[in-house]
Image (tube, rainbow over all chains, first blue to last red; front, side):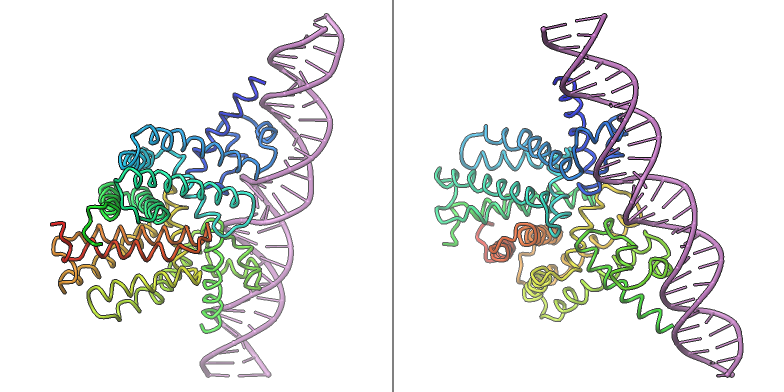
Length: 200
Length: 200
DNA sequence: GACAAGAACGAACGGTCGTACTATTCTGGC
DNA sequence: GCCAGAATAGTACGACCGTTCGTTCTTGTC
């Protein structure tokens, strides 16, 4: 059971990396096979099917994202610091071109109009992510860092938007101001959520 | 010259529609041929090559986007009304699943790591779009609707982010609150840019 | 050392990809 | 009505797609 699991993990690791470049549907068994230095049929024996491979790669990417972004962020103190930590880790994940997060952005665009198991899983993952953000934000309300009438779902949506914009500006346009813009947008978001605001 | 141009336009129209579903790289000559009811070779004679087809479809999408979003928005009075009009038309374009805008979102994610002519054109188009947004915002500064020290590039980036988030929430998650969230984020953006803000 | 089970391979399949060449049909000016 | 040239169809090609199958090599168990 040891040898098989090792290559399986190598396949998935490389799969996430490749899919982050060419997309989940652009991911090809033959190319992945030669990238991992094994035969097409040998790799296929692990994958079972193309769709299964895509789902496994997606699961691997999710775990990598949780490990490098979510989990470290949750170690920060409750409330605004935790929100900031989440943002920081997320940005770092994007800046260093870590594939996990990027793969989700790419896959979400790819599959937003293609029904199937991959899309269903993507919807679940994104919903979970939104829920996690909202939950982190909610503790900020309880801690008194944010207004009691602030909308956690709206904040989750807005933060996600900022990250999407950052990824696009950073990766497609190569805009050196991308991170600075993202940070400023993030601060605007926090300002709008803080109780010291005089608007109401 | 008439007949050829007619079918050419039909091809591109259908091409934008298809590419908005399966992406620019997922767009296939054979499928597009049968979708337009002609033979693969007949269509290929117009396309010249796959990459050329992608560029033509991209150009068509850009024109459709300009016609349905940019041009109508510019008809609004200078300043904040024009910014609002731009946002409204853009949201409408996304809500009605008009393919033009969506194709850009999808293509941007697809090609952010794949060098080539398609990516280069995408970068140009996105840069142009950002510049247009910034310019529209700048007139708002001149009109006194926005603070003099507001950053047009930041606003363009932020507005683009809101739209990206809207597209994702609307199309992938099917979130019924997507538009409402986008509108609220947009209002937050405007509030942060308005001179009546007490923050400074 | 025999042997079952798992892991990886090589060859082949039907299909579709983009592309090239050759034919056929259509169309518009004379 | 003819005919050049544009527009479309037909056919073929090599490459790669996902998938299957039979075979070989490794590995742990008795």
